[in-house]
Structure formats: structure tokens, C-alpha cells
Image (cartoon, helix red, strand yellow):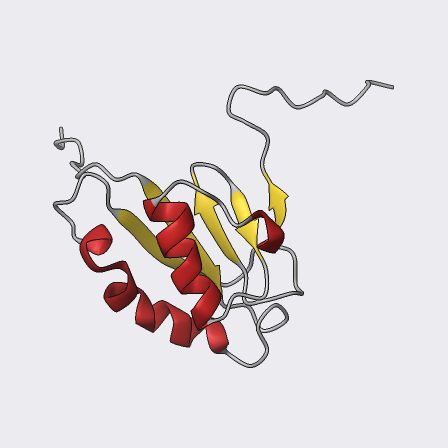
Length: 120
């Protein structure tokens, strides 16, 4: 039997979409490369308030990119550039204040059931 996987705690997980339809100019990859510097202490593995980061080839929106999603809130930002990324880190991730003027979607809160399709 294998041992369970161990992971340090974290507060947020952010994903940047690098899909060619969402981000045809490839700007998301450059933003992702900036994250370690912009996150500073929030990016350190031993920080219990750390921000995990990742990229994804598709978030299923295919426009308005670069797109960035913040979990666990499920808040989706559009047209992210370096200035907005810094604001998201400072205001949303550090201070807990999402930048609603740049949000185009938010997931339902955990525990909210999805309606079932009627059976024919």
C-alpha cells in the first residue's frame, strides 16, 4: 500500500488560460512567468496563505483573454494584463476584495445543487 500524498496548505489557486482562441497573442504565458515575482511571499510553498498557480490550455470560453480564474471563489477575470494581474494579487488575493468591474463570471457557492434534467 502506498502512502497518501502530502501537500502544504494554501488559500487560493489561480489558473491562466493559454488557449490559442482565448489568447491568440500568447500573453498569458508571459503573465504566468511574472507570477513568482508578483506573488512574492504569497507564492512560497511554506506559506499557509500561499497562492498555487497553474496554466490550462482551455477554460471553454475562447474569447476575452487572457482569462484568469481564482479558486475557491470561482471568480473569472477577463482581458488580464500585467496591471490587472497586479491589482488581482493586491486587492483580491491579499485583501479579499475581488475587482468586480473585471469579473465576467462567478461559480455558484459550494453546496448549491445543480438542477436535474427532467427525465423523458
